[in-house]
Length: 343
Image (cartoon, rainbow, N blue to C red):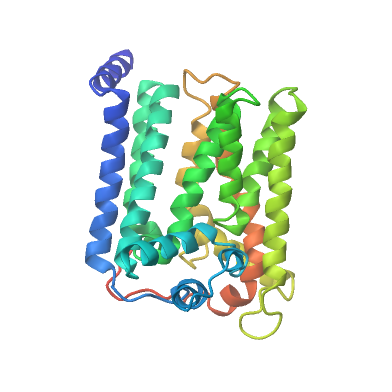
């Protein structure tokens, strides 16, 4: 065992931190570009026609685009950054190119993987770093989340990952009130305009602050305010959607809600055990980050507690309520290109 640990440390010593992070990011970027090249199309798809074409591009071409259009609810989300990227694309390059959006999404996801890989290398032991990096590569490179790879509209997902990482990391690692600490809170605020369920991240940061040690009020109060704001934004967005018909975003009973909750946890599979099996590797891996050597309890253990499996378990009920009507009626049917790979 000692020999294995020594060889692992020697292997990591050959790769400086920047090289390790850059290599990880490039592998993820290349794998996602490969999926785009094989399975993506040039035509806008589904929600892009409403959120991008109807709400942003059309008004821009007519000279009627106002700031409020970027903050319009879309189901339970307010995809501000997705709309901004579309507007920059049209205004700057005079084109609406879904493939360009997919390339940007791949770059965002690769940047997240690189930042996470660098953090793992700095805070975990050598053997744990290899295991955690392998887990990051497996989850980031395999086409499990194929819709987020081959659909340009899904930029909110890699941007949510980036916002979550920066927010959680520097909320614990930086001194409260410092410049980087406030930048972390800004990242948390930005994340609220990616996915409606992002409110769970600042709530968990506040709870971990309160759980780990007595802290100054500002440590947990600012994240708690962000969580409250995010919950209000999500509830407001949900209430603004249709209340009747096929797109009604509400559960009609407990059975429908529980069905949708498990469906959300098991996405994209509708198999009975998918909710458990698909989340088990990442959940064990993230929880395991708190066990290896070289984890200062004031930073890394707090980070793992807030960045572990708990956000998904907490936010999935909030996502299930708006999605219940749709997912209950379409359990095993997803809009999936015929040529898309099966994870």
